[in-house]
Structures are given as structure tokens and as C-alpha cells.
Image (tube, rainbow, N blue to C red; front, side, top):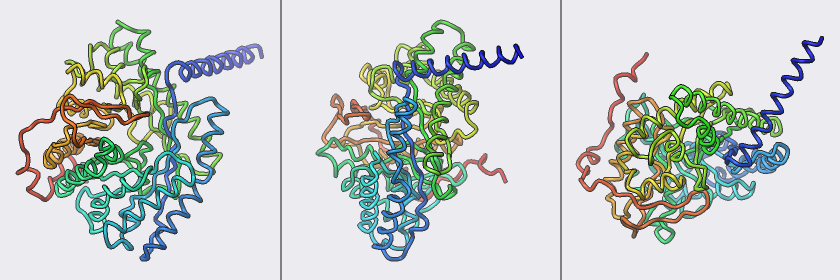
Length: 466
């Protein structure tokens, strides 16, 4: 009996210690739940009449998501865990509007309906103005893609993504070339605002169906009618933990990162399960991504410096990032049976003060960032380039990143901002979580003949596993 009492006391003390430790991470180390994202299937909204589709979409979103924001606020209050964003992702809209939309402008009405529904339920962003075209484009896919500049410019909360390639299908170079034009057009239409509409547009290779992070979130067709996905972020927590083992060997370094990632993921699991219970909607995944913000102490680049680099971008950066990403994933999968999405380390420029400092110091270039994307979670993210960069050069940058994802069987992405009227030495100001970005130089040699070939780059030989 005495042994049982001692065991119960010991377990209680461990739990109290964990609570205190979590409170410390929240109060001083920028731990937060970056987003609760409610995925909603709109497949039952399809109709041949455009007005009916818009009515169905608005009704479905506002019905299913009516309690999402309030639920997030109640969880924040009860557990003291900051939940920065409440978001929605929906079925790729190219599928939903395919039967009714006869022009790009028809698709724009769907984006505007998504925006109205998002405002009605109070979420920060809504994703899923998307097309999946890794092997080819339907007429509906192409119309949606061509509508993106106007759709993003006439809405506030809509995010758009296009999947251009996969390990199984190869890379759709026709779509890559088109997206070079679309990104530039999106920049031009919002040039009075530092081309900010481009922040809401991302292209993917191997896009996951359950990603809760914007701008790439959409609700995959293999998902349930509705599902709760949670994204957790804690760069500051990892950096603080590493400060305590400064100078130790790689074994200690890796164990520290892994244990810290475990703790952070458990916070996400708690929030996800509580939201699922309160909303009566199935829990999908926890995405443990070290997603930085411009806040001091909330930087992935600072973690790399704590590992031993003078600046992100110095020799050894790719190895350090590979180590970080791997240990984050290992810790996450030990903490939850349902880790998914992108899970790992994000390396955006504008959203990470350490990355901005590295670019300003000349330590970090576009080419080095591309090398780093081979081992991180996403890809070239929130990068500002000169506004006069040719469309074909943007397409070439996209093609390179898609190839990294295709060959390495991983998710890669490009979210790039050709800032119209800006050049080297300038910067663009986005504000809030998006921060600011110095204009980065781009290789001036042409790839026009390459991207204009048309067709599809075949899938790699290792994709054939049947």
C-alpha cells in the first residue's frame, strides 16, 4: 500500500513539474498553438448552377465552423495556451466549381463567397482556393489558376495553393510556366501594397492533404467530412533548451531537441483533442512545425546559431538544419500517433528576424536557401525578389524547388514575392506575423528556353514501386 502511495505521489509531482515547465515555455519562450484549422469537405456543394454552388459553399462553411473561434477562445482561457489563429481549409475549389464555372471570373465569385463565410465565422484565414495539377490540368483547373490574381486581390482572408508536381507523377512544366506568369500578375495587381497578395499564394510539390498552415492548407479528398488539425510552433522553446547544453556533443544536442519537440507536441495534442471533443469533429493530426515569427527569440535561424553557426547560411547550415528537422520529427512522433502536415522546421525569410539579419549580412543567399530546402519542411518561403524579375526566371526557381521535392520524396514549396518597383537594397514591409523582407538578388542568366519547352518532367525511377 505504501509503495502505491509513493508511486502516486511521484506521478503527481511529475505532472506538476510538467505543468510548471509548460507555463514557463508559454510565458517566456514563445510557445504557442499557431493554429487550429478546421478542414471542411465541400464535395456535397457541387452543382451545375453557379449561384447554387455559392449558396451551398457559404451555408456549409458557416454551419460547420460556427463555433470554431469561440471554442478556441475557451480552450485558451481554460488551459492558458495561446492559440494565435483559427483557420479553415476546404476541398480544392477547382473540384467544387468545375461543373458550374465557365470562366475565371466565375471562380472569383467562389473566392469571394469563401471570404464572406470566413468573415462571418471570424476566422483569420481560409485556404483551399486550390488546384491539384501535378500530372495535367483540366479546364476548370486552368480557369481557377488564371483567376488567382483577381481572386486574391478582391478578398482579404482567402489563401491559394497549386500542387505542380509529385514523386509519383513528375512535374507539370506547363503549369510551372503558367504559375510564373500568375505570380507576376498577382504582384502587379497589388503593387500599391508592396505586392502583398503574393503572400497568400504558394505552389507545392507533394502537397499534403492535412496541412493546417497557410497559405498551403486545403482539405484533401481522402479526408472526412470535417476534421480538426492543429499546428504547434516553438522555436523559442528549442533555442532556450539548447542554451543549457551549449558546447556539448551532438548526441546531447540531438536528445535535447528531441525531448523538447516531444513536450511541444504534447501541448498540441491536448489542444487538438479538446477542440475535437468540444466541436464534435474528429481529430486529424498535430503538425509540429518550428514556424518562426518576427518576435525576438522566436527564430529558427537563432536555433541554427545556437547549434554553432555565426549566421544562418554559413558553412554547416544545411547539416545543422537537417539535424534539427530530423530530431523535431522524432520527438513529435513519440508524442502523438497522429503527427502529420508538414512537421519540421520552416525557413521563411520575412517571418524570421534571424533570417532577415543573415540576408542583410550577406551570409544567406537564394542559392543557399535552395540547398537548405533539401532538408527542411517546406521550401523557399516568403522571399522578396526584384519586381523586374522575368516570369520565366520565377518559373525556373519553381521548377528547381519542385525537382527537390520530387526526387527526395518530400514536400517542397515556393512562396515568392516579386516586389514591383523594388530592387536590391530595398525592403518590403508586410506587418504583423509576416514581418519584412530585404530584396534578395536573383541569378540573371536566362532559363526561358528551358521552361518554354512545355510538357511534363517524368517521375524519377524510384517512384515506381508497384
